Image (cartoon, rainbow, N blue to C red; front, side, top):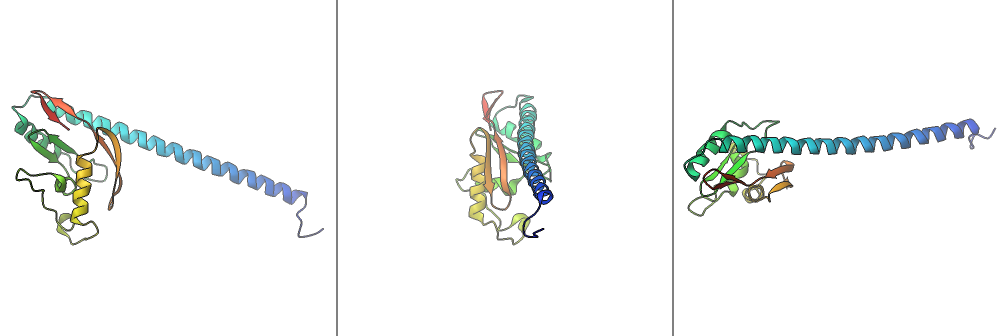
Length: 178
């Protein structure tokens, strides 16, 4: 028997191995895509539920003007601590201001009453990490704050892809919020 040419058993074993590899590859791709799609859908559902919950809390009791809604928004966001499974929450009240549970991420893009923008430290929490410069932080904050209504995904350099849900609401008294 010639060692360079496999016999019928060798050819059959190679064919079976090839079929198994192709089947495993197809299964892996299908599971990977299905899991990614399911996680994306679940994230969108959780974002919608969170926005509904916050909208209900904000509009539950009519406030006396935009400043009162902003105070209530600050109370809501201060109770939402940022952690591994938490959401970044930003509530903008027309003519009232913006409240957030993650000021280091969002506030650099908020315009103050004097026309300036909030100052930005070089690093998060006062450290000297220069990987994300102040201008980039300001741009990231602006992209978050000006995202269009609905779902969107933005890329933040130090974080990666961030999924956003922006919704505009009209609160009692005709006050707008986003």
